[in-house]
Image (cartoon, rainbow, N blue to C red; front, side, top):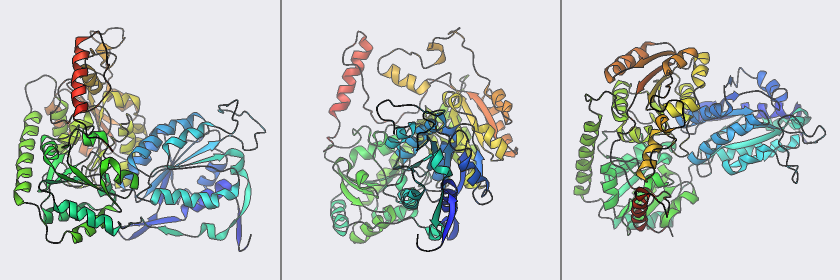
Length: 619
């Protein structure tokens, strides 16, 4: 091989290459990979751990408690860093690897970068089958790592040590590309990891990566400007891509100059503060009356950095049949959706070019005034549902409001699945941009606590992660409370105990089926009239956290003030109502039985057919 070489094992070379990758954040050069979440086992404990141990001063390794949760922590970190800096997660060859598949789905759905490295079976197959190997009788080259192919943007199995020379830069470039961003996966067979190879010195040269900002096609921009100029009631939908492009301020300036209200998707919430004069609320199935009314009335919708999933579009019932879309997105696939006039490019650059093409055009000022009136009415409705009452058990809305009022301006709210996404998307009043993390692209139960650990690492004392989690999600994955106690990454966790999977019970009953197997009282348990409940405070204390159980909103408010003073992760639990929800939702298309003996199901089916009749045709 021409030029100077370094003889390393494949595993050592992987690690050395990764520690020489850098990026810039706010003008400072920082490592592109901030660290590794690892659980060592069969397939990564000998070679890969040997390589990581030698560089722990440059690439710290953090031991997780569960492979899925540590990969979720890496995803929370990437979100908090706006995809500018990433983490690695590594596992063994079998159950450790498959545990990470769910987390890969989270990153894939949310367009988030994380490098997943799993051990793999022997390339030479001499000791075949090995511990943890799942055999495929007719295709011996398949391993469980092939399960990552549907949930990763980049996938490779390294069967020769030279392959990483081309594969690693491609994996990094995929994660760096705003149009192709997502998880990358490398399967490292354990015998290939041990092989020494003469690697070119240049492979380990420092490289500083920057996120590309692709400019849109000029013809697309001109067509978009012409369409927007025809609008009488324009609306901007701000998605997660606005945040990842650091385009919040630019989009707000554009909207202000053009007189267009902004509504936010779930991933886009936090691009504006709650009381920003252009903010008209969250849109969609867990949205606001203000945003959904504006969506119904809009004739031209400018969707920026959103993949337009069904919770944003109300399963495509939220907009007028003749409404026209302009979609700005770095990903062509997303920009093309649902008859949109596609503007493929970086959010910030595309908004700038669209602004220049609009000349002096501005929407009628009365349109923005109406949006402000609708938002004021929505905020009043929200306050009415959040106001304390004499009810013995508080609602989610009341708990969210109490926590929101207690939170510092720089504290980051983290939540994911169950009933809390709707209540936080509606009821959490963002005080500072980029302090809201609601994972609802994959709606992954268990994301909350794990991601809180990643967020705590990312924000490094600038505020505290405030994790809102239901009892169902908590029981599914909570062990990173212990991780944060071990590592000193404080977060405040509020467990809302409503006795089971309350929000899915709501959907089940709404579509005609009596409550079944969701709330504890409706499950096959020893005593359904008084099912045994978990003492979440005691459980958290057993993992070393500070903890209190609260019997009322007043106790919760007091406990939140106490939690701010503690020096470690603090968990607060409170019983919450399983049946009370803030209104404002758009409609949603789900499967309802076409025939049923239940009258309630037959009625729900008729209503579902009404909803489907309202859907725009996606051609």
